[in-house]
Image (cartoon, rainbow, N blue to C red; front, side):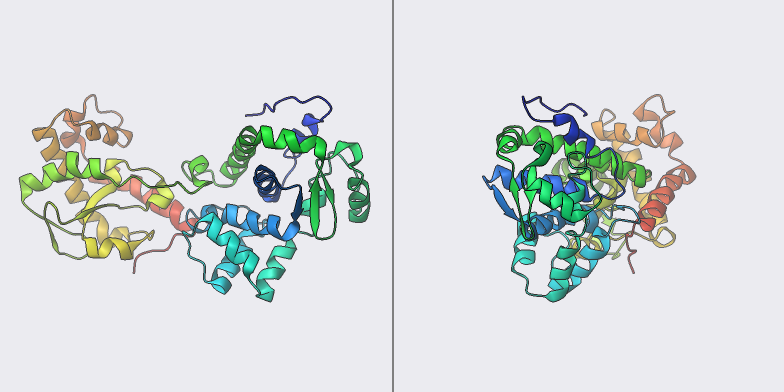
Length: 351
Protein backbone atom coordinates (compact mmCIF):
# COMPACT_ATOMS: atom_id res chain seq x y z
CA UNK A 1 0.00 0.00 0.00
CA UNK A 2 2.04 2.96 -1.29
CA UNK A 3 -0.77 5.41 -2.09
CA UNK A 4 -1.46 8.34 0.23
CA UNK A 5 -4.34 10.80 -0.25
CA UNK A 6 -3.43 14.08 -1.95
CA UNK A 7 -3.86 17.45 -0.25
CA UNK A 8 -3.13 20.86 -1.73
CA UNK A 9 -0.16 22.61 -0.14
CA UNK A 10 1.03 19.57 1.83
CA UNK A 11 4.13 17.66 0.63
CA UNK A 12 2.69 14.15 0.91
CA UNK A 13 5.61 12.70 -1.07
CA UNK A 14 7.95 13.63 1.79
CA UNK A 15 5.76 11.77 4.28
CA UNK A 16 5.96 8.63 2.14
CA UNK A 17 9.73 9.13 1.94
CA UNK A 18 10.05 8.96 5.72
CA UNK A 19 9.90 5.17 5.57
CA UNK A 20 12.28 4.61 2.66
CA UNK A 21 15.37 4.47 4.87
CA UNK A 22 15.10 2.81 8.25
CA UNK A 23 17.14 0.46 10.41
CA UNK A 24 14.71 0.31 13.35
CA UNK A 25 10.95 0.35 13.91
CA UNK A 26 11.05 3.74 15.68
CA UNK A 27 9.67 5.80 12.79
CA UNK A 28 6.69 3.52 12.38
CA UNK A 29 5.69 3.61 16.02
CA UNK A 30 6.43 7.34 16.34
CA UNK A 31 4.14 8.17 13.43
CA UNK A 32 1.39 5.81 14.65
CA UNK A 33 1.51 7.46 18.06
CA UNK A 34 1.32 10.95 16.54
CA UNK A 35 -1.77 9.99 14.56
CA UNK A 36 -3.44 8.49 17.63
CA UNK A 37 -3.06 11.72 19.58
CA UNK A 38 -4.23 13.81 16.61
CA UNK A 39 -7.32 11.58 16.44
CA UNK A 40 -8.01 12.61 20.03
CA UNK A 41 -7.91 16.27 19.00
CA UNK A 42 -4.46 16.98 20.46
CA UNK A 43 -2.39 19.79 18.94
CA UNK A 44 0.33 20.08 21.57
CA UNK A 45 1.56 16.64 22.59
CA UNK A 46 4.04 15.85 25.35
CA UNK A 47 6.96 13.76 24.14
CA UNK A 48 6.70 11.54 27.19
CA UNK A 49 3.18 10.59 26.12
CA UNK A 50 4.35 9.81 22.59
CA UNK A 51 7.22 7.63 23.83
CA UNK A 52 4.91 5.77 26.21
CA UNK A 53 2.44 5.22 23.36
CA UNK A 54 5.24 3.85 21.19
CA UNK A 55 6.06 1.26 23.86
CA UNK A 56 2.38 0.45 24.38
CA UNK A 57 1.76 0.00 20.64
CA UNK A 58 4.65 -2.47 20.30
CA UNK A 59 4.00 -4.27 23.61
CA UNK A 60 1.86 -7.16 22.35
CA UNK A 61 3.92 -7.76 19.19
CA UNK A 62 7.15 -8.13 21.14
CA UNK A 63 5.91 -9.80 24.33
CA UNK A 64 3.20 -12.16 23.11
CA UNK A 65 4.29 -12.96 19.56
CA UNK A 66 8.07 -12.61 20.12
CA UNK A 67 8.64 -10.83 16.81
CA UNK A 68 12.24 -9.72 16.30
CA UNK A 69 12.67 -5.99 15.58
CA UNK A 70 16.31 -6.32 14.51
CA UNK A 71 19.67 -6.00 16.27
CA UNK A 72 19.78 -2.17 16.24
CA UNK A 73 16.31 -1.73 17.69
CA UNK A 74 16.17 -0.94 21.42
CA UNK A 75 12.45 -1.65 21.80
CA UNK A 76 13.06 -5.25 22.81
CA UNK A 77 15.56 -4.47 25.56
CA UNK A 78 13.46 -1.56 26.81
CA UNK A 79 10.26 -3.58 26.95
CA UNK A 80 11.91 -6.57 28.65
CA UNK A 81 13.26 -4.29 31.37
CA UNK A 82 10.05 -2.28 31.75
CA UNK A 83 8.01 -5.46 32.00
CA UNK A 84 10.09 -6.58 34.97
CA UNK A 85 10.29 -3.14 36.61
CA UNK A 86 6.60 -2.30 36.33
CA UNK A 87 5.25 -5.87 36.62
CA UNK A 88 3.05 -5.44 33.55
CA UNK A 89 1.33 -8.53 32.16
CA UNK A 90 2.53 -9.82 28.78
CA UNK A 91 -1.01 -9.72 27.37
CA UNK A 92 -1.98 -6.37 28.88
CA UNK A 93 -4.08 -3.96 26.82
CA UNK A 94 -2.40 -1.00 25.13
CA UNK A 95 -4.36 1.50 27.23
CA UNK A 96 -3.25 -0.10 30.50
CA UNK A 97 0.41 -0.27 29.43
CA UNK A 98 0.31 3.42 28.44
CA UNK A 99 -1.29 4.46 31.74
CA UNK A 100 1.26 2.56 33.82
CA UNK A 101 4.18 4.07 31.91
CA UNK A 102 2.83 7.61 32.24
CA UNK A 103 2.18 7.21 35.96
CA UNK A 104 5.45 5.44 36.73
CA UNK A 105 7.90 7.22 39.03
CA UNK A 106 10.64 4.66 38.46
CA UNK A 107 13.84 6.29 37.23
CA UNK A 108 14.80 3.36 35.03
CA UNK A 109 11.44 3.40 33.28
CA UNK A 110 11.74 7.14 32.68
CA UNK A 111 15.26 6.61 31.33
CA UNK A 112 13.99 4.07 28.80
CA UNK A 113 11.30 6.48 27.64
CA UNK A 114 13.79 9.34 27.27
CA UNK A 115 16.04 7.15 25.12
CA UNK A 116 13.72 7.68 22.16
CA UNK A 117 14.21 11.43 22.37
CA UNK A 118 17.84 11.12 21.24
CA UNK A 119 17.04 10.61 17.55
CA UNK A 120 13.43 9.73 16.80
CA UNK A 121 11.60 13.11 16.81
CA UNK A 122 14.11 15.08 14.74
CA UNK A 123 15.26 12.24 12.44
CA UNK A 124 11.65 11.73 11.34
CA UNK A 125 11.72 15.27 9.93
CA UNK A 126 14.79 14.66 7.75
CA UNK A 127 12.80 14.70 4.45
CA UNK A 128 11.66 18.25 5.30
CA UNK A 129 14.71 19.58 7.16
CA UNK A 130 18.01 18.18 5.91
CA UNK A 131 20.42 18.78 8.77
CA UNK A 132 22.56 16.51 10.93
CA UNK A 133 22.54 18.93 13.85
CA UNK A 134 19.63 18.30 16.22
CA UNK A 135 19.47 21.95 17.34
CA UNK A 136 19.19 23.13 13.73
CA UNK A 137 16.26 20.77 13.10
CA UNK A 138 14.51 21.95 16.25
CA UNK A 139 15.03 25.59 15.29
CA UNK A 140 13.70 25.30 11.72
CA UNK A 141 10.80 23.06 12.75
CA UNK A 142 9.48 25.72 15.14
CA UNK A 143 8.60 27.86 12.11
CA UNK A 144 7.23 24.72 10.39
CA UNK A 145 10.15 24.90 7.96
CA UNK A 146 9.40 23.41 4.52
CA UNK A 147 5.88 22.77 5.82
CA UNK A 148 7.02 19.96 8.12
CA UNK A 149 4.24 18.15 10.04
CA UNK A 150 5.18 19.29 13.53
CA UNK A 151 7.37 21.69 15.52
CA UNK A 152 9.87 20.31 18.03
CA UNK A 153 10.44 21.63 21.53
CA UNK A 154 12.31 20.16 24.48
CA UNK A 155 9.34 18.39 26.08
CA UNK A 156 6.57 18.50 23.49
CA UNK A 157 5.66 18.74 19.81
CA UNK A 158 3.08 21.01 18.17
CA UNK A 159 1.21 19.71 15.12
CA UNK A 160 1.39 21.97 12.06
CA UNK A 161 -2.15 23.40 11.53
CA UNK A 162 -1.84 22.65 7.79
CA UNK A 163 -1.21 19.00 8.61
CA UNK A 164 -3.61 18.61 11.50
CA UNK A 165 -6.81 18.29 9.48
CA UNK A 166 -5.13 16.05 6.90
CA UNK A 167 -3.85 13.65 9.59
CA UNK A 168 -7.21 13.54 11.32
CA UNK A 169 -9.31 13.15 8.17
CA UNK A 170 -7.10 10.40 6.74
CA UNK A 171 -6.05 8.73 9.99
CA UNK A 172 -7.23 5.23 9.06
CA UNK A 173 -5.52 5.30 5.65
CA UNK A 174 -2.33 6.67 7.20
CA UNK A 175 -2.29 4.02 9.93
CA UNK A 176 -2.89 1.28 7.36
CA UNK A 177 -0.03 2.72 5.28
CA UNK A 178 2.22 2.65 8.32
CA UNK A 179 1.24 -0.89 9.35
CA UNK A 180 1.72 -2.13 5.79
CA UNK A 181 5.26 -0.76 5.66
CA UNK A 182 5.95 -2.04 9.18
CA UNK A 183 4.77 -5.50 8.08
CA UNK A 184 7.20 -5.49 5.14
CA UNK A 185 10.02 -4.32 7.40
CA UNK A 186 9.39 -7.01 10.03
CA UNK A 187 8.78 -9.80 7.52
CA UNK A 188 12.26 -9.20 6.10
CA UNK A 189 13.69 -9.68 9.61
CA UNK A 190 11.44 -12.64 10.47
CA UNK A 191 11.27 -14.55 7.15
CA UNK A 192 10.08 -17.81 8.72
CA UNK A 193 7.46 -16.36 11.06
CA UNK A 194 3.91 -16.71 9.71
CA UNK A 195 1.27 -14.01 9.44
CA UNK A 196 3.26 -10.96 10.60
CA UNK A 197 0.44 -8.58 9.62
CA UNK A 198 -1.93 -10.09 12.20
CA UNK A 199 0.67 -9.87 14.96
CA UNK A 200 0.93 -6.09 15.06
CA UNK A 201 -2.32 -5.37 16.92
CA UNK A 202 -3.95 -7.34 19.72
CA UNK A 203 -7.23 -8.80 18.49
CA UNK A 204 -10.26 -7.76 20.55
CA UNK A 205 -11.20 -11.39 21.13
CA UNK A 206 -9.84 -14.78 20.12
CA UNK A 207 -12.05 -17.44 18.59
CA UNK A 208 -13.33 -19.79 21.34
CA UNK A 209 -12.87 -22.88 19.09
CA UNK A 210 -16.46 -23.96 19.74
CA UNK A 211 -16.99 -25.09 16.17
CA UNK A 212 -13.85 -27.23 16.16
CA UNK A 213 -14.99 -28.85 19.40
CA UNK A 214 -18.56 -29.58 18.31
CA UNK A 215 -18.02 -30.48 14.65
CA UNK A 216 -14.74 -32.39 14.97
CA UNK A 217 -13.48 -33.42 18.41
CA UNK A 218 -16.89 -34.34 19.84
CA UNK A 219 -17.31 -36.75 16.91
CA UNK A 220 -14.03 -38.39 17.91
CA UNK A 221 -15.00 -38.61 21.58
CA UNK A 222 -18.46 -40.00 20.77
CA UNK A 223 -16.71 -42.85 18.97
CA UNK A 224 -13.95 -43.49 21.51
CA UNK A 225 -15.80 -42.63 24.71
CA UNK A 226 -12.73 -40.98 26.22
CA UNK A 227 -9.23 -39.79 25.33
CA UNK A 228 -6.25 -39.44 27.65
CA UNK A 229 -4.80 -35.93 27.88
CA UNK A 230 -1.24 -36.05 26.51
CA UNK A 231 -0.10 -33.61 29.20
CA UNK A 232 -1.75 -34.89 32.41
CA UNK A 233 -2.82 -38.44 31.56
CA UNK A 234 -6.34 -37.69 32.80
CA UNK A 235 -9.36 -39.03 30.91
CA UNK A 236 -11.19 -36.52 28.72
CA UNK A 237 -14.88 -36.91 27.90
CA UNK A 238 -17.44 -34.81 26.02
CA UNK A 239 -18.25 -31.70 28.02
CA UNK A 240 -15.12 -31.93 30.16
CA UNK A 241 -12.21 -30.84 28.00
CA UNK A 242 -10.83 -27.82 26.18
CA UNK A 243 -9.47 -27.58 22.65
CA UNK A 244 -5.93 -26.25 22.72
CA UNK A 245 -3.13 -25.39 20.30
CA UNK A 246 -0.23 -27.86 20.28
CA UNK A 247 2.11 -25.16 18.90
CA UNK A 248 1.02 -21.89 20.59
CA UNK A 249 -1.46 -19.68 18.78
CA UNK A 250 0.84 -16.75 19.54
CA UNK A 251 3.28 -18.23 17.03
CA UNK A 252 1.17 -19.94 14.36
CA UNK A 253 -1.62 -17.33 14.50
CA UNK A 254 -4.26 -19.76 13.19
CA UNK A 255 -6.78 -22.34 14.41
CA UNK A 256 -6.18 -25.08 11.83
CA UNK A 257 -7.37 -28.46 13.06
CA UNK A 258 -4.03 -30.25 12.56
CA UNK A 259 -2.55 -28.13 15.38
CA UNK A 260 -5.47 -28.62 17.79
CA UNK A 261 -6.21 -31.35 20.31
CA UNK A 262 -8.40 -32.01 23.34
CA UNK A 263 -6.68 -31.21 26.64
CA UNK A 264 -7.31 -31.21 30.38
CA UNK A 265 -8.97 -27.97 31.52
CA UNK A 266 -6.68 -27.82 34.54
CA UNK A 267 -3.56 -27.89 32.38
CA UNK A 268 -4.51 -25.62 29.49
CA UNK A 269 -4.19 -22.41 31.52
CA UNK A 270 -0.74 -23.29 32.82
CA UNK A 271 0.62 -24.22 29.37
CA UNK A 272 0.12 -20.67 28.11
CA UNK A 273 2.23 -19.94 25.05
CA UNK A 274 4.95 -22.47 25.84
CA UNK A 275 6.22 -24.95 23.26
CA UNK A 276 5.76 -28.72 23.71
CA UNK A 277 8.92 -30.82 23.69
CA UNK A 278 8.43 -33.10 20.70
CA UNK A 279 10.47 -35.92 22.21
CA UNK A 280 8.01 -36.03 25.10
CA UNK A 281 4.63 -35.17 23.58
CA UNK A 282 4.67 -35.69 19.80
CA UNK A 283 3.99 -39.44 19.62
CA UNK A 284 0.85 -39.18 21.76
CA UNK A 285 -0.28 -36.09 19.84
CA UNK A 286 0.26 -37.84 16.50
CA UNK A 287 -1.71 -40.91 17.63
CA UNK A 288 -4.69 -38.76 18.67
CA UNK A 289 -4.58 -36.86 15.38
CA UNK A 290 -4.30 -40.04 13.30
CA UNK A 291 -7.22 -41.73 15.05
CA UNK A 292 -9.26 -38.52 14.83
CA UNK A 293 -8.78 -38.33 11.06
CA UNK A 294 -9.76 -41.99 10.64
CA UNK A 295 -12.93 -41.55 12.72
CA UNK A 296 -14.05 -38.27 11.17
CA UNK A 297 -13.44 -39.51 7.60
CA UNK A 298 -15.59 -42.55 8.38
CA UNK A 299 -18.36 -40.74 10.27
CA UNK A 300 -18.55 -37.42 8.38
CA UNK A 301 -16.47 -37.72 5.19
CA UNK A 302 -17.47 -34.22 4.01
CA UNK A 303 -16.38 -32.58 7.26
CA UNK A 304 -14.89 -29.18 6.32
CA UNK A 305 -12.10 -29.45 8.89
CA UNK A 306 -10.57 -32.39 7.02
CA UNK A 307 -9.62 -29.97 4.23
CA UNK A 308 -7.21 -28.25 6.59
CA UNK A 309 -4.93 -31.30 6.64
CA UNK A 310 -4.28 -30.80 2.94
CA UNK A 311 -1.82 -28.01 3.83
CA UNK A 312 0.42 -30.77 5.24
CA UNK A 313 -0.51 -33.50 2.74
CA UNK A 314 -1.04 -31.46 -0.46
CA UNK A 315 -0.78 -34.41 -2.85
CA UNK A 316 -3.93 -36.09 -1.58
CA UNK A 317 -6.68 -35.93 -4.19
CA UNK A 318 -9.50 -36.04 -1.63
CA UNK A 319 -9.80 -35.62 2.14
CA UNK A 320 -11.30 -39.11 2.33
CA UNK A 321 -7.87 -40.48 1.36
CA UNK A 322 -6.15 -38.87 4.36
CA UNK A 323 -6.03 -42.01 6.57
CA UNK A 324 -3.91 -43.83 3.99
CA UNK A 325 -1.31 -41.06 3.76
CA UNK A 326 -1.25 -39.81 7.35
CA UNK A 327 2.46 -40.46 7.66
CA UNK A 328 4.18 -39.89 11.01
CA UNK A 329 7.45 -38.68 9.49
CA UNK A 330 5.81 -36.10 7.22
CA UNK A 331 3.53 -34.93 10.04
CA UNK A 332 6.46 -34.56 12.44
CA UNK A 333 8.58 -32.64 9.93
CA UNK A 334 5.92 -29.95 9.88
CA UNK A 335 6.07 -29.53 13.67
CA UNK A 336 9.84 -29.80 13.96
CA UNK A 337 10.16 -26.81 11.66
CA UNK A 338 7.59 -24.77 13.60
CA UNK A 339 9.12 -25.59 16.99
CA UNK A 340 12.62 -24.74 15.80
CA UNK A 341 11.59 -21.33 14.41
CA UNK A 342 9.44 -20.50 17.45
CA UNK A 343 12.26 -21.43 19.84
CA UNK A 344 14.70 -19.23 17.92
CA UNK A 345 12.23 -16.36 18.31
CA UNK A 346 12.19 -16.62 22.09
CA UNK A 347 9.32 -18.99 22.86
CA UNK A 348 10.02 -21.09 25.95
CA UNK A 349 9.49 -24.84 26.33
CA UNK A 350 7.20 -26.65 28.74
CA UNK A 351 9.13 -28.06 31.65
